[in-house]
Every structure is written in C-alpha cells, then in structure tokens.
Image (cartoon, rainbow, N blue to C red; front, side, top):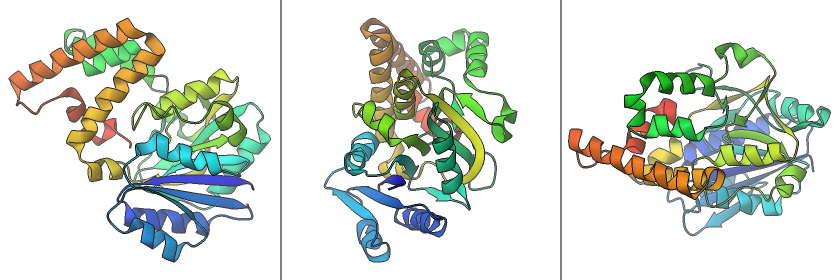
Length: 299
C-alpha cells in the first residue's frame, strides 16, 4: 500500500463529498486507502460516504472525538507507506498525490511536508510557519501585546517566513495539518498525535516530534490543494471552540515550557479576558476574538 489518507469530518457532508471526488479523480497509479473518521455528524455524512464511496473505510464515532483522537484511530489501522492527513474542506488537484509521494520517496531526510495551498478565492494560503514560541503567545494572547507593541511586531515578523516562499522548496519548522504528508514509519515512531490536544497546536506538536527524530519538515512548491478553512469550527460554534483553543494553548505550553510558565500564561489570559469584558461585553475573550478573524484560524 503506497498511501493512507486520513480525513476527519464533522458535519461537512458537501465539502467531504467534493474532497473525496478530488482524491479519486487524481489518484494516478498509486495504491491508496482512504479513511473517513466521522465525529458524530448529524448531516448524513456517513450515509453519503458509504453509498457513493464504497472503497472508503468509515470509522463512526458516537461523540465528537475532535481531531487528534479521531486521526489516531485511522493511524492504528493504516497500511500505507506514506500518510496524508487531510481536512474534509480541501480539494486535491491534478498530480498532487504523485508529486508529494514522490518527494517523500526521494528525500530520505524528509519526515513530513506540505504543498502549495490556495484559499477558495484562489489566493495563496500560508500553511507553514516557525514554532509558536512562549514569548509570542504572551504578546498575542495577553494585554502585554498592547503594552509592548514593538516587541509584538518583531516576534510576529520572526514567526513567519518570507512571502516569496510560495514557489521555493523550503525547510520549515511547522506545516499545517489540513494538508500534511508524512512517512508512516515516523508517525508510528512518535505514536501519532498527542491526543491531549483537541484542535489547536496539533500541527505544532506533531512537527516538533517529527523533527526530534532527526527528520526535516519541508514546504514544497509542487502539488496544489484548495483549502476552504474553518468549516468544522463554524459547525461546532466559535464560542465553544474558543474554550478548546484556550485549553489546548495552556496544555501546549505546559508540555514544552513547564508548569510555572503555563500558569503565568493562564493568569495573564484571564486578566486579559477580564479587561475585554469590562471594555466590550461579558462574552468577550481573546480566543473568541482570534476565531472571528479567519486569518488567525485554519481549522
């Protein structure tokens, strides 16, 4: 088996159907298997997949397992040499599968990659970054960013790569897991996703773990994926997802920066949210504000 494709779906029936059609239209000569892990959708997604795509293996959850636990269920059953972690709100375009698998096959140092990705309006989507540092979290998620705007700008500028990277092969630190291709042996070596994270910092964590094996992460200009973004988030509801965003953030910095730093960040976020409530309304919080700006959220 050449490639396993793992897709988590939550009430994205129409987008999921288009995604699966794009996969099977452009499979090429590769031997692939496709898993759809459905997180208790109520829009007949499961019935649609079973009736229109009989070759797809459907894993049905009775409750929303979110992203990491759901993907890990497919990883446990995967037979492919390579893995594509794919959002249900994406479209695979011509030759993408062949090009990405070929790159992983020909580059022994590579552990994971992503390819050229576009928004639905045809604009280029930046789906790679550097690690999201603790200092950056302090600036972006707390009132410290207002107190030190120059520091915030410097850190945010350092977080991104040059805008002209789109047509270049580039080693990067993190690639988005809406469209992440990896070697399956490495995914098994790192035990897949850390399922303590539900939706956020999932790509940051898995890319750090891949890099710790000694392998590299690449953005490649070959291939072409369209990503609509935010489909599952909008189905779940921004208000409830903002709480998950907060929880995943604290878990991430607890894991990589330690207890004290995580507690400090949590306290500063709480103070920031209180200030937002006093200024705007009782429902205000920093992560809700982030999620209301699509450029800040790619789930």
